[in-house]
Image 1 (cartoon, helix red, strand yellow):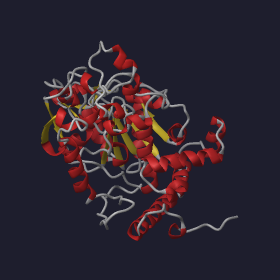
Image 2: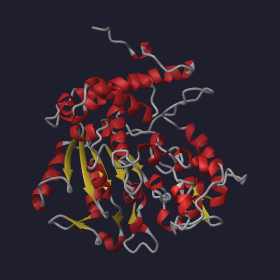
Image 3: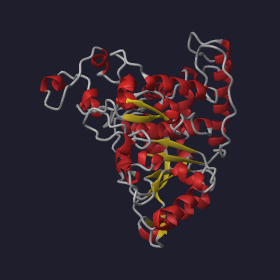
Image 4: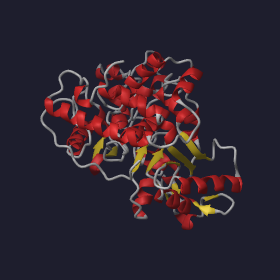
Length: 427
C-alpha cells in the first residue's frame, strides 16, 4: 500500500511559483478538513459510488480520469483530482432541495437528460435530492410534508436550488404553490433562510429571465435580488443560461462539497470557472471571425454550409460569458452555434431586452456590459477588423479588479494576496 502523502508532498503542475504552491497546499488542506467533516455524517441516500460506477459500466480508473477533467474544469491543479473523487463519494451526505418558481422547467429537463455518463451524471445518482416537484412521486399535501420535514431535518445544511423567477407583483399573487396557496415570495423566503447556500439555476432564477422582460408585468426578479431585498444573508451563486448545463450545476455542488463554500464569482454572481470566458473565445467558428469570413444573411447557404462566423446574423457570442462551447448540451453532442444558430446571449442579465432581435446584426446598437459601461457590438466584437474592442478591455479590467478579491490564485505571475472568503454557513 502506498504511503498517504500530505498536500505539501503532492505534485503541483510545473511553472507554478512558490507562492502559488503554498496557496494550493493551503487550499488542499482546507478541502481535506471539509471532506473529513462531511465524511463524519451519516449517508442520506442508500447509494454508493462503487454501485453507481458498476451500474454505468465504469471502472475506477475511468472514474478517476473523469474527476481529473472535472478538476481542470474547476480551474484546480492535479493535486485536487483525488479530492474531487472523494467529494463525489461523499455526495450522498449532501441534501439538496430543488424548487420550481415562475419557470418553464427547462433546467430540470436539461438536468435529467444527462446520460453520457460524465461525473455530472454520476453525481446526480449520488446526491440526496430530498425535494423536487418535477421528479418526486408525492404531490399535494404529501409533497408539502416532504419539504417541511426536509427543512426541519437539515436546517442550515442543505443546498436550495431555485428554478424560475420570483414574481413580486400583487404581493406575490402571480405565483401560488401547494394546497395552502403559499406565494413564491413566502416559499423562497422560508426555504432560503434555512439553507446553507442557494443556487439560482437558469437565467430566470439568476436575473428574472424572460418573465422580467419589459414591461415585466409580474414584477419578476432573480433569487439574489430577492434575498437582498429581504435582508437574507444566505450566499447565492447564479448559473444563468436557458437552460443551464448539468455540468455547471453539478460542478458547483461538487465545489461546495469540496470546500464547504461557494466558488469565486464574477461581477454578476456567476462562478468564474464556468463563466470567465466569452462564448466568442471558445467558439469553433472563431477562426472564420478572425479571417473576416461571415455568413452574410440567412439566405447565404454557402456560408452556412461552410460554417462561417454568425456575427453578422446576430450572434451575441462576443458579449456573452459562458462555457457552452466547451461542455455543450445533450451529452456534449452540440450547442446552438455548432448547430448553425448564433448565440442569443441568454446567460447575460437583461438579454431579453438588450440582445433582441436575436437573428439580425447588432452592429451600432449599444449594449450593456459589466460595471455599467456602454459599447456598440462592433466595439465589442470586431477585433479582426481593427476596431477597438471595448468589451474585451472592460472585461479585462473587471478581471483585474475581481482578482483582488478572488479565492483562487493564478498558477503563475506576480504575487497575489488571498482575500478572506465570504463567511458561508458551514457545510
